[in-house]
Image (cartoon, rainbow, N blue to C red; front, top):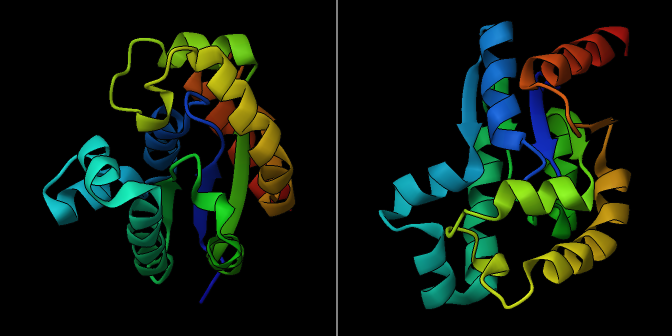
Length: 171
């Protein structure tokens, strides 16, 4: 496995999919979103999978998709916010590419996810509290997995993608 892929990790609303598309276009690479691949393979959306199989069933599907994508080369992959929870997933990403942790302030994350009803973990009474809880739990794992940490607050996808390209070229 060569280290030719770029994996974008981070919380919901950090900009992984949007920045991933821009980054892939700038590098003339294929863009993949693990959530979209799961939906395409199952013919069901993520909330339905969560309802039917629970988070554990979804995480199994996510790990299988990641494993398949990691065997390809020159991809830019936007991952689901919880993909780092399985140590095997972190190892797969590290072995086959650069891992970029996209961060953002709680205010930005809440603002960016507030109108999105397709995020099962945020369908709660207090989405801000849930985002804070998820961040407290996952931030150390994102940091441990990451080759680079990039803050996306109030920055354009193009600016962030250019920073990622620079960091990879300098590494």
